[in-house]
Length: 139
Length: 85
Image (spheres, rainbow over the protein chains, first blue to last red):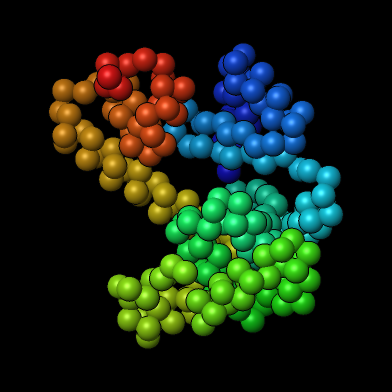
C-alpha cells in the first residue's frame, strides 16, 4: 500500500502506458499498472456515472493499516458481492475464482451484511438469481 | 454452481476458519492477504531459481512475471527476452 505512489510513478514514466491509461480514463474503462520492483499488478477501474457506481463509491470504508497508521479506502462487503456478481455474469458465469470470492465474502460477512441493500441492488442489476444461488452455496 | 472449499475441507474446520476470519478487523485481513501473496510469490521465485540455476536476476523476474501474469504481460513489462521465446 505504501508503494502506491511509486506504482503510479512507474506508470507515468511509460509513454505508451500513459496513453492507454488516458484512453481508459476517457472511456471510463479499466486498466492495470505494475509496480516493477515487486511485480505487483494494480487494477484500475474508473468510476462511472451509473447509480450503482455512485452508491458503491459513497459506501466505501476507511481503514487504517498498522503499524504505519496509513489509511486507505475499501469497498463494503455488500458492494464487493454485487460487483463480483456483475463480473461473474458478464464473464459468462464460468469464473470459479469470482464465484469463490462471492461465496466466501457472504460467509465471512454473514451477520453484518445489509441484506435489504443487497436484495435491492441485486434486483436492479439483474443478478438476483445469482445472489440467491450464492447465498445457498454460502450456507 | 461451483463447489467452494467443501471438496477438501471438513465442515467443522471450515466453520472454524470462517469464525477466525470474522474475528479479525478488515485491516488485519488485508495485511494477512498481502503476506500470503508475498509468501506464494517467494515460493514461485524459489522454484524458478531451482529450475533455472543459471538464470540471472532479470531472467528470474521475467519468468516470474510470465508465471504469475502470463506471457503477454511479461512481454509488456520486459519486452522480448530469450526466456520468453
